Structure formats: structure tokens, C-alpha cells
Image (tube, rainbow, N blue to C red; front, side, top):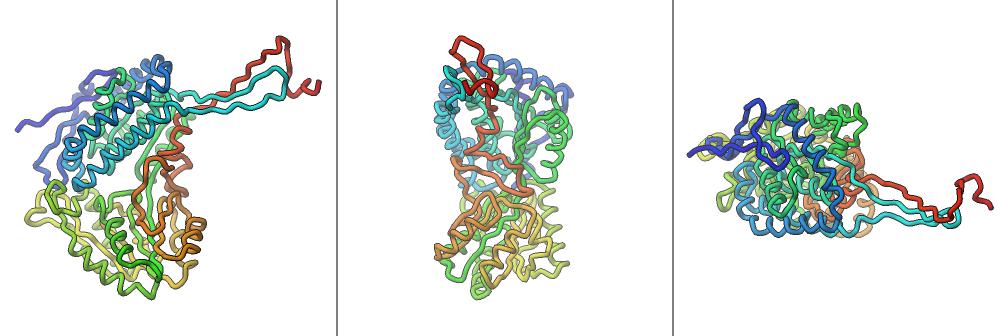
Length: 496
């Protein structure tokens, strides 16, 4: 069976990379299954894409926002029709189970419909002027060409979070999909084009960070950067973008804590812990990677959680009954194994898992057993650093205040969770947990598109996806209309 070769999308045309270099996109559940060959783009390809986006901006910004929104609405309808096809292809390239890839596509559908509604709500403000016969208002303006660097764990949902609000605001885009999962971004952009998006408004350059991502960040005609990925890479993106004074939206790592109080519904908390820790094979920035247990219920909860985690079915996400898919590549397997060794060396107790699965049906993929550590102390690296794999740390506490202190003691602040039947504790958690997201009686995953998504501390730099994204993808312009037919000097003669 021949392997399909994909090209960059530049100015509405599919174009081979100037270097001719490509890379393989393989199924992490079976590396013999090659999804496609994709361009290994370099700076010259990025420059062509940016030039195409800049040219398209001249006309796209003049399309009325409600008309831009209609294209997004049609995109949502087409995505709904193609949901199963795109989910199947996403599982092949990313690995997570079909139920989750269907949800990934559904999130893009939801984002399309949500942002389409914003096409008639790009509101500004009107305000009284301090001078007579003068009108004052503010309006939103598009930024220009936006560079976007997307991650591999939500290869359609997260690009939709970036592309759709940028487009409805009148910007044009150059997106670099993650090298592990480019096809899903290609599918998303193809759907936009089928819905009527003009040529050049969205351009794709696939490739690796140093060769394609860095030139995109540094290009002088790119007016802003939206990045989702690790905190280490995000720091480099911010530093390089600063040289050309372009704003950057960063959505980065997490080490998310789920707190289980003694009055919690333990069965509900157990279900939440399994889903939060091992959904998407732990490869979410919002994954439940720390579970803080009140000492009085810790032994019972731990015993039941370990038994359920050990029984989870790991395998190819396309196969029925599989609950945990592969990790996306060998590098992620190596990171999970490294943190298992670190945790053992620091004195944590391995309760289940802790190793790559390499035999039988696992021989041609990158699988790691669901892993739980007990006897974890807050100062251990396994309790403080992001693993981005199916590895969860259990910690114990005596008081709610102690739980909050442990949860807040790390450098990340993305998502948090509290299980308790006490409404007072719930509102204390909402107030006191240092995070961009707090769940009550639900795990740390499950964000919805119409609320702000992002975090504090080393998780982000203050911008948000979802509600609030339009604040990043627009700039404010103040407008003054003087109809007095005479010179009026504000702050000088307005006492007359």
C-alpha cells in the first residue's frame, strides 16, 4: 500500500517544501502503519506562507464579521458530517481511543458554532465625551497575520480554538501543526476551505520546531503568536517574539491536583480519578497527575484505585473495549520511564504499572502501563514536575488548609479539583486554589469551549483560549467624532 504524501498549504495551493524534505507520520499503536508523509518545512516555506497570509489580509479584513462567521458555521456543519472519518484518522495518528477522538472533533464543532455567534457580537464601547458635540467610542480591529503553533494531544480541538476566533476577528493565519499529528489540522483547514474560506486566509506549514516554528515566531510580518506546548518551549517562544514586539499567547504545562475529602462521594471520586489520570493516556495539560487524599479515606481509596487502574485495558485506540491508548512517541515513553526511576529513587512506592508494554500486541507501538505511586511527599519531583503520561502520584493530608497548601506549592497553575459534599469547602476551593480552572466533584479535565481556558504561574502568560480569545486576536481602536464644527482642545478648554 502506497503512502500518501501531503504538501504545505500556501495561498490556497498545495505546495511541496522547497527543500524537498519530508517526515513520516506513523500510528503510535503500530509503527508499521504510516499515516502519511508530510513536509519538513524550513524558513523559506514559512516566508512564503506569511507572504500569502499578508496578501489575503488586505481583503479578508474587509469581509463583514457576520459573513466571516457564516463560513465558520458552515465549517461546524461539515465537521459534524465528517466526524467519524476525522476521528478514525485522528486515532491512527495520535493514538487516543475513538470515544476521545470523536470528542476532539466535537469540540471543534462546538467551537465553530460558538465563535460563529461572536461574528455579530464584536462589541466595542460608546462613552460620553468630555466635550460638547463630540462622540467617543471604541472598536475592535484585527491584528494582522497570526502565527500558530499547535500541540499533538488535541490535534483538531486546539487548532480550532486558535483559528476560529482569529478568523472571525478578521485576521489571517499561518499554522504549524505538531509533527506527530499534522493530518488532523489538515482535515480541519480543508473543512474551512470547503466551507468557503478564501485562498491564503489560512496557510499550513508542517515541520519541526527549530526549522519551521522558530522562523514563524521570528518573522517580522507575523503580528502575534499563539502557542500551546511545554513551559520550556513556551519560554523560548516568548523570548524570540519579544525581539519584534509581537504579543504571545502561551498555554503551557500543568501538574494538576484533585483533592478528595473525607466526606466525598468516594465512588464518584474514583471514577473521576481514573478518567482524569488515564484519559488520553495522561497526555493532557489538564490531566489529574496528583491526587490528594484525606488521611482517613486514603487507604480505602488507594486500594480501589490501584485495582481499577491495573484492570484498565491498554491497546490500539481503534479496537473495541480499549480504554487507554498508546503514548504518542518513543520520547514520551522515555519521559514516563525516567520519572518512574526518579520517583523510586526518591522513596515513592510503586503501586501498579511503572513500565513500558513491549510484548505481544504491544510490540510495534509505544505503550505504557497505567502507573500509580503512593507514599509521595510534596517535595518529590514526581509531585512537582509534569510527566505528560499515565503516571499519577498519591499524597495524603489532614486538613483542607494543608491540601490547599500542597496543591498550590508547585510552579504550575492550570486545573484543580475538589471532591466534597460541603458547600463551604467548595467555595473555599474556588477562592483559594491557585489555578485557571477549578472543578467541584469532577476531575481536572473537561473544559468547555465557551469559558476561558488557561492558567496562572508557569502555565500561561495571562491570555486565554475560549472566552477571552477575542481579546488576544483583536486590538482596540478609540474613535472620536467631533461635530461641533470648531476646534475643541480636550483637557485644555473643556471648562467652557
